[in-house]
Length: 172
Image (cartoon, rainbow, N blue to C red):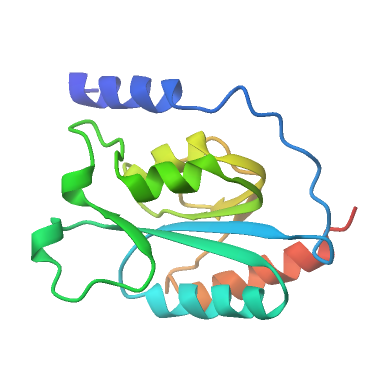
């Protein structure tokens, strides 16, 4: 293990929000707040479609995407909150205003879509004040309550179908 990876792992561990005590998942009908954090790419449409479905169901949904490019390289800015490669520290921790704003809120459900071993999305996930965390089974974040598989096709439409099923299935 390289010294950079050791430092990154230490800082990731240190970023964990250990002061927040999550409440029980209230069940889909009582669910009010939700956040989705992801690495922007070809699945953005599926993520936005799911967010719109949840908003139509009366849920407040916040999106935060990581764009692995420098801000000046982005030709068309997305229509969701995001942070870029130049807003990430040398060890991978995001430092943008959009990230700070998201982390100020408390969420009943927090969905993290990270398929990489090392991603700035991990820092956001471990620092979030969330009652119930949903993530991909191939993601490398220690703080996940419900793991869903993306399959070999990495089709997020299928992932969101599974997430929605389990959020409705689990009742309190």
